[in-house]
Amino acid sequence: MTYRFPLPIPTLMTDRLTLRAPRESDFAAMLAFNDSARAGFVGGSAPRQQVWRGLLANIGHWALRGYGFYSVDTRAGDFIGRVGVIFHDGWDEPELAWHLYDGHEGQGYAHEAALAARADYHARITGQPPISYIDVTNARSEALAKRLGATIERTLNDDDGHYHVYRHPALDTGVARTGVSARVETQGRRDEDAMKTSEKGD
Image 1 (cartoon, rainbow, N blue to C red):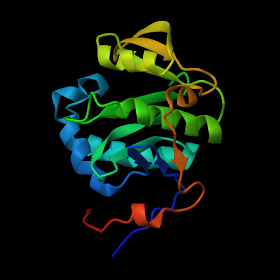
Image 2: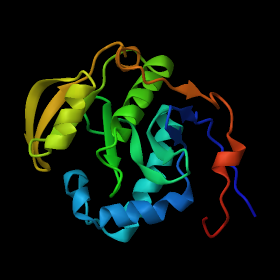
Image 3: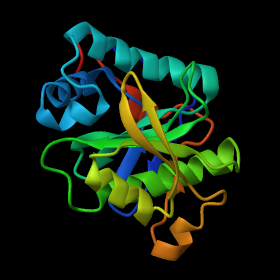
């Protein structure tokens, strides 16, 4: 038995990556990331059921707002992380966020995926600039934010930590500037091939 994803989530194709809708089979990699030291900046070491609910919440975010985290695959089909714009209840405004899984950092994947996700957000949702919340000790993410053309707007201290708030450009000129391009392969329709999953997961 297969399940076809009911939401018209676009699939974005860059030179090296595919940004696609979430799948049940993503859960194992999400769980492994949660249990790794790399997840410390995004609230890692959560209980298994909380990670599962996070996967479901992202699907709900797409249903409610029309945007959310894309799952990022290499052209070889390896699921390497999640990138997208999210806006949860209680937040000031939408955030462009990213995280890559172990072994895939340092190759420009996060930059390439973030440019594509940001351009898609500007094209389909609004030209208003998103922000990025970045832990003040997360030097790699701060470097990526700057490479994306974002600038520090303020510092935020709350119960979850100490963050720099980066403001992204209002118009996504980063794609043209860096030569990274993205094609929308399934805008406004179901990507039946990519969304199939068995009852027990892939």
